[in-house]
Image (cartoon, rainbow, N blue to C red):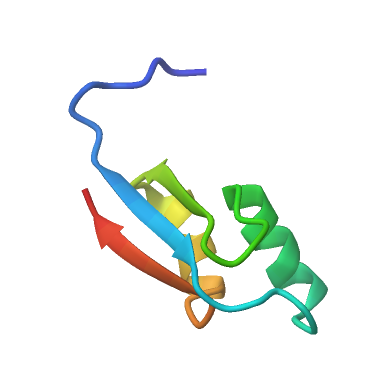
Length: 66
């Protein structure tokens, strides 16, 4: 696994809607990002994998750069 770079951009992701009643794949995607409950906030590297996960559950989260 590659070492984390200091210059790597990060995005902050906040869960703003409940996971109750959502598709199982969307719940699993939110959990893989570290989002479990409404209001949970995580910082993830801005890369293709994270962007794909955010796109899948974009209706559940708020994303900010930085």
